Amino acid sequence: MVRMEALGHMNRFNIPCNVAALSILVALFSLASCSDKEGSKGKSSKKSVNIDAIAEQIIAPEFSSDSAYYFVEKQVAFGPRVPNSKEHDECGIWLANELRRHGAEVIVQEVRSKAFDGKILNLSNIVGQFNPNSKKRVMLYAHWDTRPFADKDTVRSNEPIDGANDGASGVGVLLEIARQLSINPADIGVDIIFFDGEDYGSPEGTPSTNTSYLDWCLGSQAWAKQPHRYGYRARFGILLDMVGARGAAFNREGTSMRYAPNVVRKVWSRAKELGHDDLFRNRETPSTVDDNLFVSEFGGVPSVNIVDYRMNVIPMGYGPFHHTHADNMSVIDKETLHAVGETVLSVVYTE
Image (cartoon, rainbow, N blue to C red; front, side, top):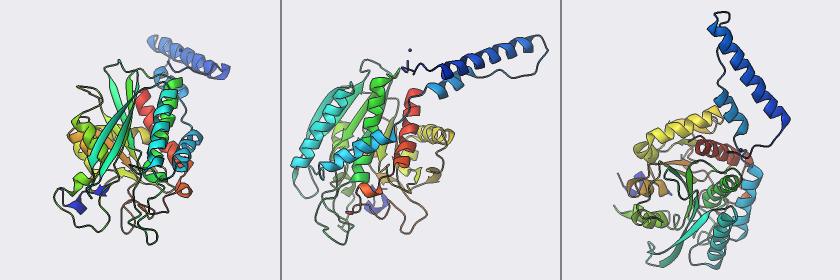
């Protein structure tokens, strides 16, 4: 992913039957009923309790950061997931099988795409459909490939990176969400998509042109032209990119604000309600070139990008480990994974 300016481009939840939780609900319901009766007789000024809101808080599925961390670690263990490599192909098979294991109907969209250097890349967009017959759908996505070179590093700059944060973290969170969907089916349809070829753009310092932004996000560009289902529609999309690092800052990304400001407000408000406003912040970043640009503009699904973009550092941007060999498991933080996963999961289950 790159800054656009740099390129010159412009029971429903399977609730655990624990007596305490049921007792709380019964007690609250009784309290609300009594309050309403007393109010109708003019004997009390108590406000009724919003039972639906309280019940929602109690029965929402719990996001497991341990599980998400495992899914990140598992991807990294394959090695760099660079297109046309054995590691890439093996990880792709595992990802598709994991989605199937969690009950998704899986479509693997095979794409042949030309990279900035003329190389033909064999890409795979991996789609997991939950509740596929529902017309009310939400799209959750991340990229699963890794950078083919460490062009921001001072050593081994021609070698591929682990991509623990840039790639694996978003996929890890979405795999845990898939696991929750298998246990606690949502009322709406959910499509989890792992896009390929996002990070095969030209190296740092390469002269840019007016079309350089098309070097990036090759898988989502292909999907936007031909989605996995004819006439595909979703209410909105949420992209997770670089969502696992310690000290992350999720500001309001500029492309998201252009195409989906209402969805930004929905997600960031939910994060605040859940107590994650220390990570989900309100400054607006520059517009960036990422998968949400193509999904929003050409795919017709207004999307937000939850991306670690740090505004209060010099130089501002994606963190000191971005596109370096330091992007390994040492930067991954379970609390960050939890904040993002819990927020997205809550948005899905209350949609």
